[in-house]
Length: 118
Image (tube, rainbow, N blue to C red; front, side):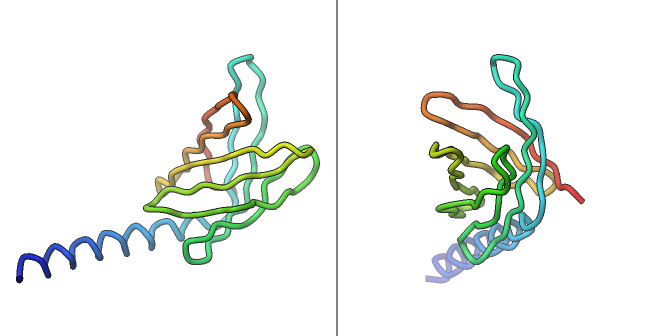
């Protein structure tokens, strides 16, 4: 019984530490998306965390677009942004001083690293 309580306490502590860390994702993050074809696209996100929900905006050529269906699960996150009727899926992980994000549109997938923007 004592072992079960100890394990449960450790797991709960890990969850709370992970949850507390990802709340630091709130703010502006920017980077550069490089495609296999050699094109480069600037990325700029303004993330907001509310519990296990991720909201905010993504800067696009069409202006600031809302982040949709944002979820935080075990230190990772997912969301999508709709630009010109196309749903662009994002998944990522917060590392404290950077964010790794995978972006996919249909069969095209790319990865970018984001840094905090002052």
